[in-house]
Amino acid sequence: MALRTGWRFQPSDDELLDSFLKKKILGQPLSYHMIVEADVYGDDPKNLTARYNMANRDREWYFFTSTTRKHPGASDSSRASRRAGAGRWKATQGIKTVLDSDHNVLGSKQCFCYMERCPSGGDTKSIWLMEEYSIHGLRRKAGVCNKRLE
Image (cartoon, rainbow, N blue to C red; front, side):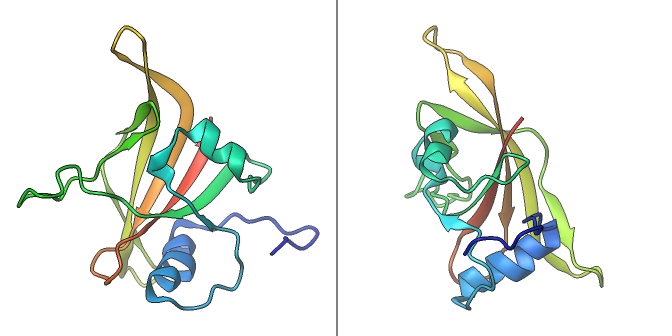
């Protein structure tokens, strides 16, 4: 759905969780289809964003994605794999709780920076940033990612 003239898609953290991610997980219809499904961890952000011309004026893209476990068969498999393309997403801040206006917990948010693999074997910080939102306790595991070019 195209945006109406003069309207910008700039949802707050609580709107992303309550109006979009929660509805998506529960299979409820979304008012606006401004967030596309994509495998955020399947490719590097430059290639991913080139496939989707969804950026707003602030050069932000919004995606629904699922995470995979770092060690799927392990009993303590709670860590998500952050590999993407030839690099990885590195957490830059701890997990923050997102509350609604009544101070009820809606979910969480974590910030990441894309680290590109160097030929020498190390990692270099790129210009790509991502905010990952999660809702815990719902049946289908999914996340909405907001990638931003710094």
